Image (cartoon, rainbow, N blue to C red; front, side):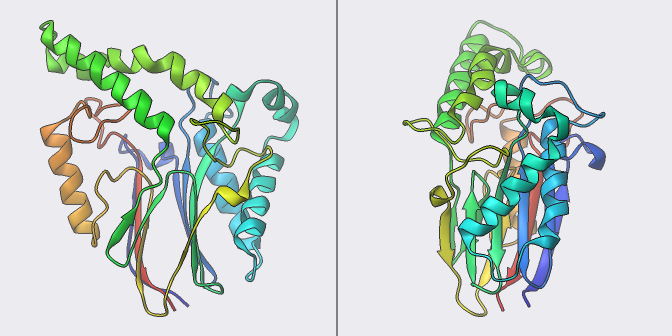
Amino acid sequence: MPQIIEQFIASKTGDPAQCEDGLFTSGDFIAVIDGVTAKRCPPHQQKTGGRMAMEALIAALPGLPTLASCEESLLFLNHALAKAYGSSYAAAQEDRSLRMQANCILYSAARREIWAFGDCCCRLGGQVYAHKKRVDTATEQARALFLELMLLRGVPQEQLRREDPGRAFILPLLEGQSLLANSSGPFAYPVLDGFPIHPEQAAVYPVAPGEEVVLASDGYPLLCQTLAESEAALCRILAEDPLCMRLFPSTKGLQPGSASFDDRTYIRFLAD
């Protein structure tokens, strides 16, 4: 059984009920689930699509067979997400922007492997594997450029933080991004959404017995060896660059009154 050293989860707004990240631990699996923030579809049952996707996958994980392979596990979770649509499945099939989406990273104790599907990250053997999406890099740079121009035109930083016109500038790209999910081409990306996926696109990492592992969502720009170090790095970055446009560009910045630019989850453990 994996030996958990430390774990943490926090909402970007400070309200746990709004957090779209999820954390699952058992003797067989450890998983970080990162529900994707909806760009256009309205909340369902007072919850965002990202929150609903996360909750559906966390609820399904106890039923994941102990010896399941990476492909079997991803298909199992994707099927659970498909069932979570209920009567909304046909509408989501027709309109991709209505789809629930989630990234995930799992550790299988039986297989001693880490499986990353999407942009959650891990730290193994002193090296960080971030799984950055090319489409995110493009939109982040476009937002950063727009905000730099606004600053040069004399728009106060606090106004940019409050209104984030850079986010509005890239919103058409964010709304259209769902067309790239589980598709082909240079900007395509893998994600669990309840529709056909490509499990072979998962990143797989073998883990040695007793090796220290960190799994996290992408709410940590710098994934360090300890939670305290990762939190300290995040605090420094947000203090120096609250617009999240220079040190580690993002598609959104630190909103006034928020705890961070994104939800974040961290777990460190020793493999069995």
